[in-house]
Structures are given as structure tokens and as C-alpha cells.
Length: 270
Image 1 (cartoon, rainbow, N blue to C red):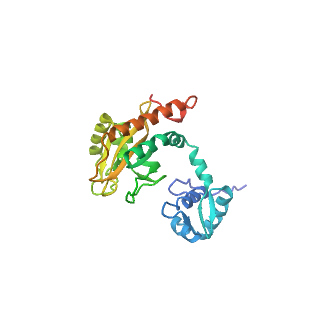
Image 2 (cartoon, helix red, strand yellow):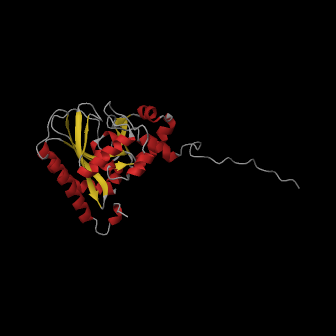
Image 3 (tube, rainbow, N blue to C red):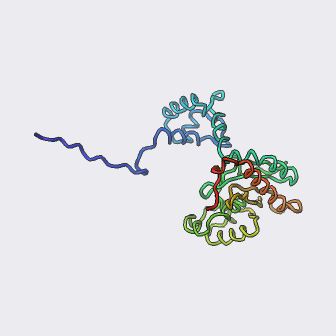
């Protein structure tokens, strides 16, 4: 009796495994951006790198799920995704922080940012523009390399420096000629930030723009950060850094007060 053996199957690795439908759906969703909030099927196919037929099928399903909506002859991100995003702990912190951020914005006359750290990027949860401010590269939901921004440095300053030295890419991302790209130089700066509680950058993310930032610290962890952005060469109001620190502390206090029974939403020092 003969036995027919099937050919051995090759185990797929993440590098060789073809993208799943879910991966393709996220590639399609990420094609939308602050500069192209409404896109046609052809534009989405070009931006996502997916075939038109695949984009057509994905759009039909995403529309059914409320993740994408029709907009005249094109498509836009659906409000269903906004609802999901607002349900995160970061969204909860942003809601609690808005009164304090608005007060700082009115008092300072500067652009106010609120952001969190994700890996080695900052993700912006809120941006309140200063009247007449020049066009900037930041936007709500946008990401920038943490080493190039004051708000990112305020967050990184509360990470473990040994871990940063081991895992940060070398060289670090560069956005302008002033960006700090050496890991050791960055960590030396982060040590000073941890002591003073204030991070600074001048033209490191965008020429002509500067920022100062303070971390929102809870249980020894920087769960977020607040920054003031202003044109390089101009001056912030007197005591602006003090007001920035007070704003960050008040947000942390409100988050701590509101976490009764939900302490697991944010990390605790071990």
C-alpha cells in the first residue's frame, strides 16, 4: 500500500505573508490625511497602492461599517471612527484637559498642543492655533518624531534612559538642520528636562517655529504633555513656562481624580 505524501508546507514569516484584508483596509484608511480629507476612488487607489477593484470592494464594506462615508463624488473618513477614537484613555484625558488648554490658549496667545507618546513618535490629541499663526506641520492625529519636538522631549524625559539608549534609532530622525540626531546628545538634554520640568526646541521640527513644553505626570509617568508654539524670535508672555507647568499639573490632577475604579487606564509606577 503506497502512501502519497503531501509536499511540505513552508511556514510564512511576517515578511513573506501576504497582507490580509484587515491590513489592506487600514492601508486604505491611512490614505486619508489632513490635506486630502475627501478623495475619489482613483485617488485612494494611488495613495494606498491597492488595485482599484480591491479599493472598490473595501470601500463598500467600510461604508457599511460606518468607517467611511460618501461625500459627493468621493469618500471621507466616517464619524464612526471618531466615536471609536474618542473612547480611548487618551481621549478621556483630552476631554478633561480641554478647559485648561483653552485657558492657556486665551492667556498666552500662542498655539497650544496636547500630545501623547507612541513608541518614539508624538501623536497630537489637540491643537489650538494662535490667531494669525503661520501654517504648521502639526495636526490633530498627526505624528512627528519625538526627538524633534519640545513636546516629545517632555515625554521622553520620563522614560528609562538606559532603554532609550538601547532602542532609539541611531541616527535619530532629522526634520531640519537643527534637529538633534545623536542619541547620547538627546539623552543628555532629556536629563536636564527631567530636572527643570520644561523642554524646549527652536526650529528643530520646522524652521522659524519654536516650542516649550511640560509633561503631564501621573504616578511618575508622563501620560501626556502640553506645549506652547510661537514664531522663533518672538517672545511668550512673562511667566509662560510657569503657566505651562500649572496647566500640565491641573490636567494630571483632574485625570487622577476621575480615575476612581479605572486606575488601569494609565500606567502606575512599579
